[in-house]
Image 1 (tube, rainbow, N blue to C red):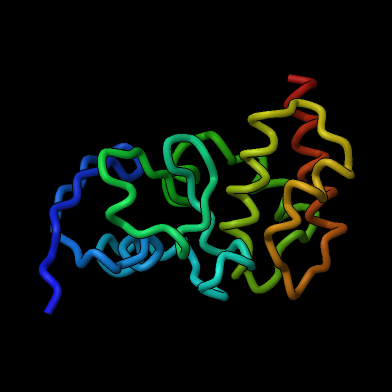
Image 2 (image 1 turned 90 degrees about the vertical axis):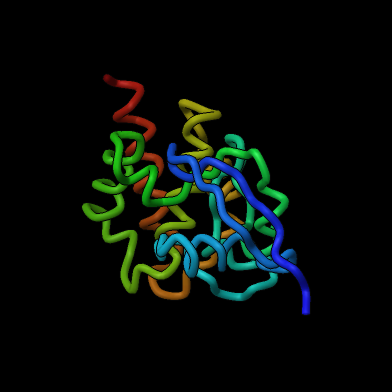
Amino acid sequence: MTAAVSLSLSVNGERVETDVLPRLNLADFLREHLKLTGTHVGCEHGVCGACTVRVNGNIVRSCLMLAVQAQNSSVETIEGLSDGEEITDLQHAFRERNALQCGFCTPGMLMAAQDLLSRSADPSREQIREHLSGNYCRCTGYQAIVDAVEATARARRAS
């Protein structure tokens, strides 16, 4: 039997210190140990983007990262972004433009969209599509999602 190892990190601004099995991926750690179920697990191969989180400010596929690799890191999940004002306007735009249906891809899509908007105040539709290309949506298509990101960028520039 594999022995647990110590893990210390910050998740959504709160310090977490616990023991985990070395092979536990970050997505399962967030969902099962911390009950942060907004991080969805879809393909478990890093392809669909449903498990997207930020680690030290960079978006990553949490199904491909071991929890122990996040040692001493800052992890932000959709719950952390949603609790503040960081993506309120983006969430509103998604709702207004019907850029979500079943909601399964939405947390990862919002994480990726916010990442793009933090890097570019005026992304083109092509840049939006490219940045979101690692996030699959099986319900809406992508037109409404691109519209929502574009509208959010426009509104942020105007304020």
